[in-house]
Image (cartoon, rainbow, N blue to C red; front, side, top):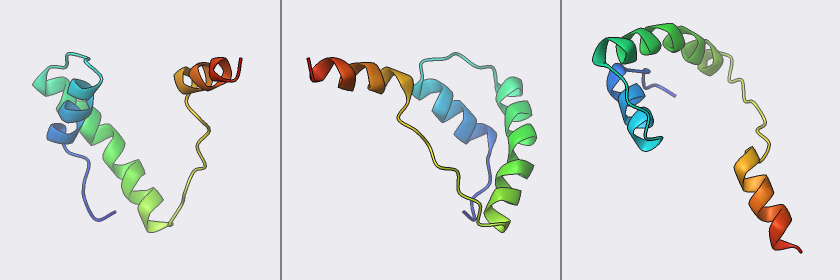
Length: 64
């Protein structure tokens, strides 16, 4: 990932999640997260993700 975590990206994710966020808060979040994301990229670290909880319930009920 050669892209940086920017305030604009944080705001886009917040908007997609329908979470209001102020410009200065988005900038602070980006500054806090960017070094960790860059380090994970340098190490080519990948985290295995489980199915997120809301999807799990929908899938579990589908089988009934």
